[in-house]
Image (cartoon, rainbow, N blue to C red; front, side, top):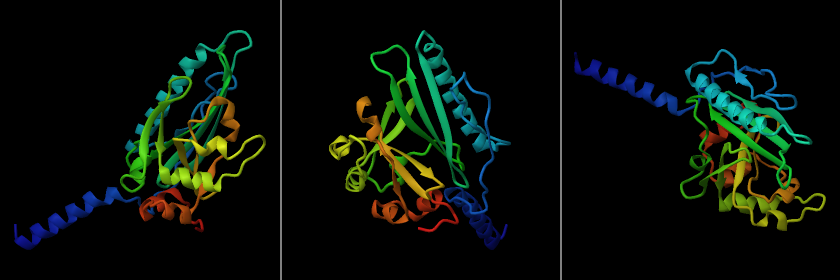
Length: 242
């Protein structure tokens, strides 16, 4: 093979290897389908219709999440016990899939619980988004925690996000700035309606959960905390305005 042909072949292979690094603007939002409730009042997570290989990986992860809550809910069926789950798809492509889950339950413990958590997946790879990798090195740390039913969460600690959240926090009801001043971890998820990255505290005491209001970070704020243009494009709506 001539040297020029070999160089051409190597160049083409290099382009192919580089393509998966970036999201394609040609990608379209995924179609989501909703199955029957896990039990009355407990919504099942949606699934991607007609999935490709990466999307099938996401569906499998959602299967595991539903199995997790099904087992937990089975032990929450005594007198005066309840479990309610509300699910919202906050972004369905082209780059990311985000599902926001809100649970409220009384399973006979000392106190009922309310918790909200986000499941965010990279539609290119089918993997859960590592938010600590979205920020410049050293600006965010991943925290592995879990919900009341033992389901694993991915949250992050970030001094920059903490400072930004406290600076922009608007108290409501009986909440004051002190309620969120010592927060050490955040949940993050893209919200296509707000055209923003939403963040909210993940480690407030149960009694302070009503104080965990979400904060919307638009293009300006994302740039301030060092999020790359590639990730900004993935998080924000393609047709949205910064």
